[in-house]
Amino acid sequence: MLEFFIHTCHFPAWLANLAVGLIAAALIIHIPAIGALVFIWAERKVSGRIQDRLGPTRVGGKFGWLQSLADGIKLISKEDLMPQSADALLFRLAPYVGFCASFAAFLALPFATGWVALEMNVAVFFVVAVLGLEVFAVILAGYASGSKWSLFGCMREAAQVVSYEVPLGLCIVIPVLIAGTLDLTKIGNLQAGWLTNWYVLHDPFTFCTFWVYFTCAIASVNRAPFDLAEAESELVAGFHTEYSGIRWSYFFMAEYGSMILVSALGAILFFGGWNGPIPLAELIFGAHAADLSGLPYLVANLMGLVNLLLKASVGMILMIWARWTLPRLRIDQVITTCWKYCTPLAAVMFFGVMTWQAAGWPSGGDLLPRPEPLRESWLSPQGSPSPLSQDRPLPAADRRAEHREGSLSPGRVTVNRLPLETR
Image (cartoon, rainbow, N blue to C red; front, side, top):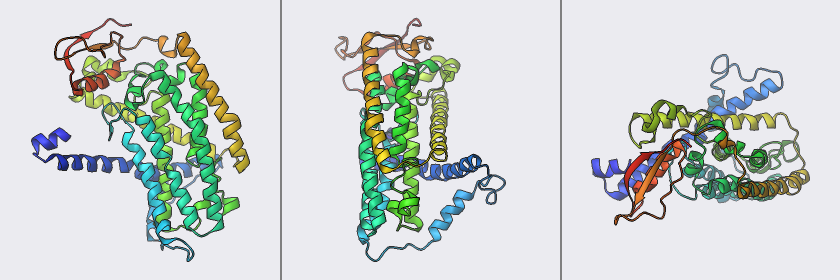
């Protein structure tokens, strides 16, 4: 897209970069915004079924499709109130800080090979670091409200998020250890092929790690049974007690955006990302799916996008299910669960995976063959072999990422692409 604006539209470099950034931001902002509308409706329906009732049925037809839209219109039309004792600047700023933190984390989240707003080789670190900034919005909102209930809620959230970042980080490091990279695109592509190539089936330790990650992810996004920052029965509504109207809705969108983010991140780290249980794109298009242009590449990426969204949606449904099934914990039980259970379990799983890797024991991907891989031969301009040349077969869907990295890296050119026999 950047090349199109520069070479075809003859935009100056700064304007082309600005246009690409605005387009990427406009596409990404639909995920937390539209996703919140969809999953608020889904939460109402799931909670209704769990409680043996129907949920929304009056607005938008039989299934209440427009209930979330009606709620949004109601919130926009409400009066924007602020307590007299509140800090005006911080009170107004807090909702936007929370939403921006949730929104910015999507910048490094790939939805398919090459479909990412900001490509970076430390994407895992970026996503986790930016997502953790959301706690600042909670602290600002609780402190600036001038209410003891809001202050109690924000202090609980700060203690909870800081605590659960430790086991959450340990769980995220395990797929990084297996893949040997912090690049989310490469982590997803290394799980290409059949279902058994997914890291959740790599060994027994990664399977257990996912459930620890899922527990910590629920706590990190302040969802029940870990929603002690809100705790309606104790703190009225916690840190956002004094908020109303559109500002309150920003907190809600940030929460659902973070839920979508941790669900999609878990899908990439453990469930193959955009790769389905069966490599349909590789079976249909063969080597053509590895090209960085053309209809096969576009169709393969669209199939991958649908795969990732479906996996993230399943994670969202599980979080909603947990909220309406499990009772809320006390604050001491929340901290105990983190330090006495999740952190030791994550450390044991990390040690187990490290031992499994060092011993060279078979992983789930050894049970079924991968699609026929290709080899990229990289030579330096002088003709000597590059130190980054590899003779090992690459996963089929990883060829696109390897091709992009090689073709854009300075000092290396592609000289041939030779098929290798199936492993």
